[in-house]
Length: 379
Ligand SMILES: *Cc1c(COP(=O)(O)O)cnc(C)c1O
Image (cartoon, rainbow, N blue to C red; front, side, top):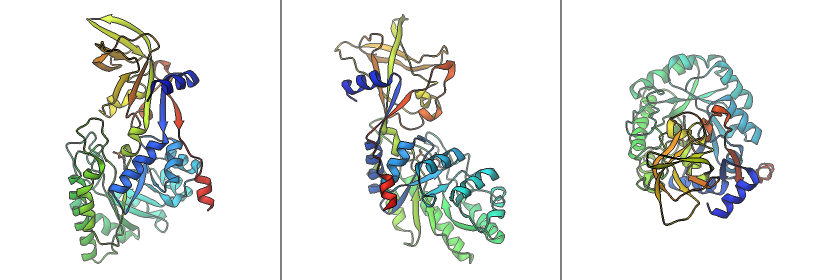
C-alpha cells in the first residue's frame, strides 16, 4: 500500500484500519479456480466472514461453505441462493440443523453415528457428506485430530446411514490449514476413491461428491510454492476419479489472506534495554490475534523512509505483557502517529480479535467492491 492512500484512509476513517481490497479476492479466487479446473470452490467464511467478500465471490460464481448459524445469516443477508451453500460443521445442535434447513441449505457433514442419528427426523430433506480424517503433522492447524472418522470406519457409517434411510452424498476431508504439499490431498483423494469403490462393492448407492476441503497455502514467506504448482498432484489424483463424481473444495485462507492490509499508528514510544519500543493502537488482542491463534507471519513495514534502521519492538496497546507484535524488527526512527503497514492480514486476524481493555477493533475499509450481484441474479 502506498503512503498517500494509507494516510488519506487514516485521515478519513481513523486508525487502526483493515483495508479489504475486493480485487485481490477476485484474483485469488480465479487463481485457485485455474489451478483446480472443474472443482466448485466453496468459500469457507470462517477466516474472514465479511459481507463484501461474500458479495464479491458470489458475483464471480463461487459457492459457500458455512459452519454456524451466524454464517448462514450472513450469506442469507447478502442474497446467496441456498443451493450454493453447504453446512460442514461435523458437530451440530438440532437448532443448527433446523436453521440451515429453514434457509434452504440441505447438505451437511457427519463423522460418527451419534451425529448421523440427529438427521433421522430430516431424512427426506438432507444429503450428507461423511468427513474422513487424514492426520497431517506439518500444518499450522491439524484439523484431522478434532474431526473426521478414520478411513477404515467410513463404510460402516455409510451402511448405517443407508439402514436409517439417510442419503449419503459423498465424502469430505480437510488436510489442515496452510498445508505444505499438495501430495497430502492426493493421498487423501486416492483413499477416498477406495472408499467409494467399497460402497459400490457393498451394493450401496454410489457416492456422487468428493469435497477436498480447504488448507491451500499463501505466501506468508517466500518459500511457499505457487498455487498452480501446489495443485499439480491434486489435479493428477482428481483425474483418476470417475467423471460422474462432482469435486468441490472449501478454500478459506487462500481466498482472503492477501486481500487485507492493516494500518496501525504509533501511540507512544520508550527506550528499554537498548531498543525503542513503539506502542501501536492495534496488537495481539486485536487484528494481530493470528500471531497467537494461527502462527501466521505477516509482513510488517513502516511508511517512514530512511536509510538508517534500528532494532525495535512493536507492541500492542493493551496493558498486558504478551501484547507484543514483533521483537528486534529493523525500523527507521518513528515519530508518534507514524503509520505501520502489515500485509497478508485477511485470514484468521479480525475474526479472532477482541476489544480487551476497551481498545476498539480495527475498522474495515472496503476497496473495489462491485455492486452487480443483484443484476446477476435477476438475469
Ligand atoms: C477452516 C475450514 C476451512 C477453511 O480452511 P483454510 O485452511 O482457511 O482454507 C474449510 N473447511 C472447513 C470444514 C474448515 O473448518
